[in-house]
Length: 363
Ligand SMILES: C[S@@+](CC[C@H](N)C(=O)[O-])C[C@H]1O[C@@H](n2cnc3c(N)ncnc32)[C@H](O)[C@@H]1O
Image: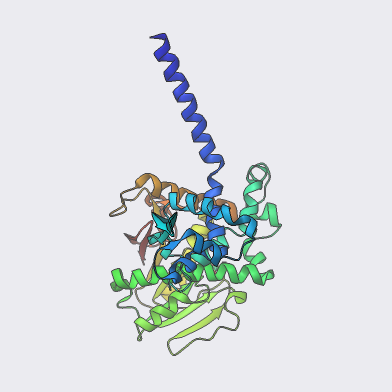
């Protein structure tokens, strides 16, 4: 009995140790992914046209010859985490491993219109990862965000001053917008039917609005974002770019789209912005709606068979919003509080975008 008890205690102790190790080294997954992207490994395997032997992969990379053996180790952890699959083969009497892409790595191909490579590059850039070292310092001071504790300015001001980061960030948003727009038009095009004009507030460089303007030629689209984001961008027949501050005035329209905007703001700013949306919709003198694309925590995501992992991903986003901007991810109750506080009459949540939902709010 005594020895069973000792066994139980030591097994729990070792499990706890392993759990902590896993947390300490979680960043190795992120940084290994960044390295794979930086080295262009996904495109190299894809361009090979068939499963790629390790030796060929190594000879295709511009790495120092003393580092050749390390590629196997990088590929091993990335295979373990689902970015590649591997088979053992015999090549010229030698045992070799060859690699193929998986759904996750195919989404990193540079030529994939929905490629997430720009998102990897921006989110794992030191400008966004350095603030994490200051999280506990920030919790003890009165800076609005950890980003400001680190960089001494708001993220949007940083982007306005650093064109490299600005391009990286805007391209990462554009890559996500391409993926979401394709899915939205395919799965839920009726959300745009009936509107004659639409403003994409904080629409970045216009990826989403461009696709909507093309798919709905009768829809007059405006991309509204900060002046440094839309500077020099050219519109088309039914698309124009307007620079400005969404907290001051939003161009009038009968539909307002806001993707990944409200989650970057605190409650007070969300209500202020939603009231501005209301003014813009009312300018048109008829019924309109706001279409939000954001996460809704704790909602039943159809077809999600790994709830624990999805919840963790949503909580990662929540922490990200806390560290880089002043926002948060919200559950339905929190969304409904914002919506009614801004004076809207109702809303509908449609969870069709994986971890994100479409939230329509009505006047
Ligand atoms: C997280 S990004 C989302 C971009 C785009 N909606 C998307 O999801 O692809 C937030 C956007 O809001 C813009 N933004 C931030 N503050 C703004 C303001 N005061 N007025 C207008 N746009 C603003 C940023 O420049 C950025 O393009």
